[in-house]
Length: 502
Ligand code: IMP
Image 1 (tube, rainbow, N blue to C red):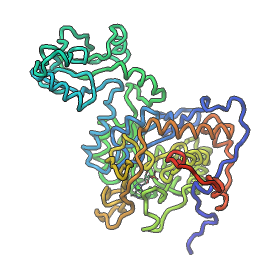
Image 2 (image 1 turned 180 degrees about the horizontal axis):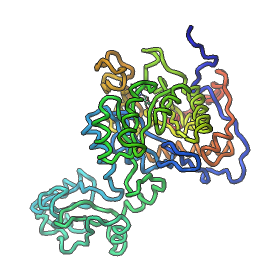
Image 3 (image 1 turned 60 degrees about the vertical axis):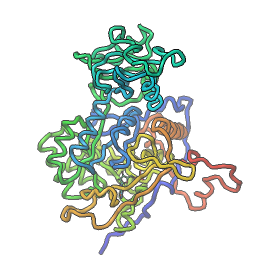
Image 4 (image 1 turned 90 degrees about the vertical axis):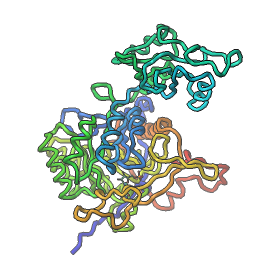
């Protein structure tokens, strides 16, 4: 006879937090959201600790290289999508790892024989006022000079005048040399009262610019997540088929942490993938696995050697797994059970395996609930897909901007490895949809706002860090009528904004 759970399968919307005592120390600026990404032994620290409890979903429409940089800047980790060729994924990882905060590849370049008119056209296009003059007119050419608005007066000069005749020539430039640190480059800017400094290599080829205006921006990223070489921490998705080739390529590209991307993790194939990684690399390679929705699934992956375990089946915004296959479990119920299993496993073995709540976070208060229910961190797809930095197209329709967002199990993603069970190599039915989400601007602003709400609620519950929050949280199930009471009701709203609903 089938096993029947006694409890109803519930989702975040069915719960509320009940406030606790807030002492005078309980103010949002005192709250830390630091959280472990990978497993650690009792008394030790996780090898990778995030500064915010957020990771981005392993999806084509979410985790590209630009989002990886933007999220690491705020203190979280992106997992670059694995539903692409090994070479392309490794390239994205390498791009994000080699991205140097504050060092900008020049995108306004011109050759010395171009004219003032060409400069004006270029400035119109790029909106940048510093133009590099290089021998081949490209960003990697030999640097011959720089043109800024101080070098010409349109009213007094002919538009045909050659760039080489009015640029500030190389001999008069103060430059930095490749290998210089950001703080040394900034010293050059400040000591010489410059707005920008070009960085060149031994052969005088242009490498980067460092701009004074970026100095403050860099200082604002107080949470940025860096490795020991001051490069951003970057994750990458893998699958259970080509790991023998993909894993070495991603590690070579610099990936700090991997995650097996699959809709269902309680499987022979995940066990085999983890076994291969452990045999080849021991514990030096960090790899997450999932997804599971109960204690049994958690213990299976814990024993197989996962460094973190993802929880959630069927709750994703683009997911139709529950409709097409009739499997899954309410995200809140799954999380509560797995988080209990993690704590018991820690008690028994002294090994703490972080768990990630993956999918179904719609409102910011769902983030808070997930953390209260035991998630060490969250994985978000729809949330990040809305931002400027996500890789998908921005579309203008009826006065509003949207971004495209599609599931990894949709025909569009054709991520076959993720959704079939191993044998047949073809997607026979879809488990995800192709959709639009409202465009929401830059990641930084949104993450700041969302987490300020999380911090504020934690204060209401008297907690200053995530483990304390988990301990102190009091959570109640709500009736369907009290859900109505929770929104604005019995008033005529003047206007609604997207943010007020998040
Ligand atoms: P969201 O944050 O609610 O949009 O959910 C994102 C999560 O949905 C991802 O991290 C995956 O676990 C899951 N997911 C991604 N693509 C699909 C799909 O096509 N079908 C079902 N689940 C998906």
